[in-house]
Length: 390
Ligand SMILES: *Cc1c(COP(=O)(O)O)cnc(C)c1O
Image (cartoon, rainbow, N blue to C red; front, side, top):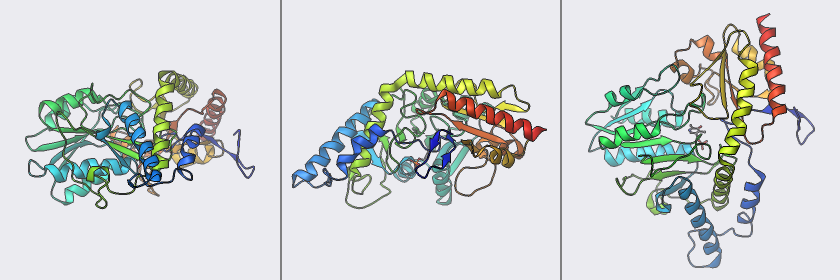
């Protein structure tokens, strides 16, 4: 509760880094000149204003490509991971529909993957929504068994936004590559946090976003492989032909520069930062694990360093949140999107009852989380659970 807001109102400690992260001040600093001084349109090829913006975009594209071992031509800027997922899934479906109309994804995917898939079902595509094991991991044999002659795409996220589970991307990619099926991964939670290398891993399309890694909202990218295989993509936004005709719309230079800086900072902080965050996460879990009814959701080890998702058997989820909200900003086990009060489909996919899914808390720790924050939150969670159990 150390954060006094602009109006002097004490704000709760922010542990909701899977929803979004505060922008790193160094990112803002890098962006500023591109709002005012270097405001040109990167597509303006007739004057120096355009050239300056174009140079910045080129540099950002190179830097972001390098972060995942891709080439600059393989990066398409989008408004975020939602758009990148839509472009990947609908763009591949449209481009490959004469070869097949079957797509495989997973029940625990983000709605930005599930909803484009549901949309394609209405257009006559067939989608397989794979279950997960009780630890949240996809079973590779189950995945292999779901692949068919007419499967054109598999979409499995890199890191889950609720339980932090890291799916075995390399193994999934191999299964797809062997069968000539394209593999897309939603890496919104993973970029800058775990190593992603599209030369080492057979990933054909990869969605990214800046605002989960201390960058600005409203910017992301889709990586699309150009060699072995060369992925075809039908554009979903038509217009001025930007991004080699694959995504029209004036490039948001300040956001792109911010995205670049955010990912560069994350790469610099690297394993050391993840290690620090992981230790804080473990400290929180050690404080909460002994409490009555508390259990861990998701794989104990194979997950994001900043993620802790717990269920508390025998307490009311709403009361739990209510008891905590002045101390800590966290999200609960209800579907976080819009005003949807349904129990989290991710926790349901782990086999939880509605009540247990509701009585869940997702903690997302990040770069600016301190040990004092964790100790304050741990005490508040303990007091709230014990009060509700009494
Ligand atoms: C946040 C998130 C998205 C949506 O990204 P936006 O950039 O906000 O559109 C998609 N997938 C996952 C896994 C996410 O965590």
